[in-house]
Image (cartoon, rainbow over all chains, first blue to last red; front, side, top):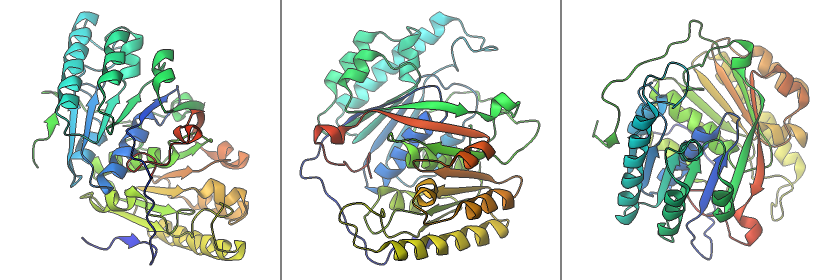
Amino acid sequence: MPKRGTLPDKIDRFEPKERRGLIVVITGYGKGKTTSALGMAVRACGHGMKVCIIQFMKGDLYAGEWDGIRKMNCDIELHTTGKGFCGIRGNPYPWAEHRDNAQDAVGLVRGKMASGKFDVMILDEINNALKIKLVDLDQVLGILNEKPPLMHLVLTGRDAHPRVIELADTVSEIREIKHAYRQGIEPQPGIDY
Amino acid sequence: MPKRGTLPDKIDRFEPKERRGLIVVITGYGKGKTTSALGMAVRACGHGMKVCIIQFMKGDLYAGEWDGIRKMNCDIELHTTGKGFCGIRGNPYPWAEHRDNAQDAVGLVRGKMASGKFDVMILDEINNALKIKLVDLDQVLGILNEKPPLMHLVLTGRDAHPRVIELADTVSEIREIKHAYRQGIEPQPGIDY
């Protein structure tokens, strides 16, 4: 591996007495939810763990992470199942089509979880999908229940359901203090997509 | 590139009318600051952008992102300059040594910025370093002033300084709703480090 940058000469390693598969929720209206999940994928990759990312809402608008993930020399799968953000201006698909897609995605999640192959599963924007009823609460609770004990499950998106928050181990709410788009600055590659 | 996962058949690409180098601050006490910055690195990598990450506080305790970043087939540098979290129980280094390290890191930042080589620069935990006076406000403001106009600059860490927030384009505060460690669950690889 090429030397890029610098690391300490001496490195200590922490190992928890007990390995646990955590449920992590990243919610709120500020910037940083999907990127935080992607960063956990980078960490997991560093540990040699196997990662599956299923994006519920992202659709046909290019996102840098698609190629970023492909450039990672890791055991990582990315499935983009949506048709873009349902209800967002300009999105041409009817609700029923978004719902069908999200329902397929739930089936994909269950299959991938049941395979027992993954150490980390990331369900990107599933909180929004639940909020707008593209998936049902029972389905999400079913996923949380079926989670293999050692698999980490990360759920992102605005408006996380209170029941999901209740069942999670770690929950962060990202508040927007400022956002460039409010100053009329359009989304920028590498940061916003 | 191996096919891993699924993407939409047809992909649209957004391009802002004007490219801007943003200042992004990710602060607050909840989980997700460093990982959010790492996720932006994944996005930038997808866009073929050049990334430099300088970690101010992380030291000799292994973090998964070190190997994760190395496994990315991208133009990305990672410098871990610190000696661990200053003031954290068990950290054996005197404040003056932390300060010296952070001062070296400021020099590194300026040199890397002046090279004009990078599209994205991430200063991980620099907010904490400023808060505990390992670096000075004037130094951080100097970095913000010297930033090349098209380079994105991401500053993470608790307790972001009000002046830094004022100068930033996008600021997120990550609030802790819950954290596994409060239930006595030790940090888990792939999620917490």
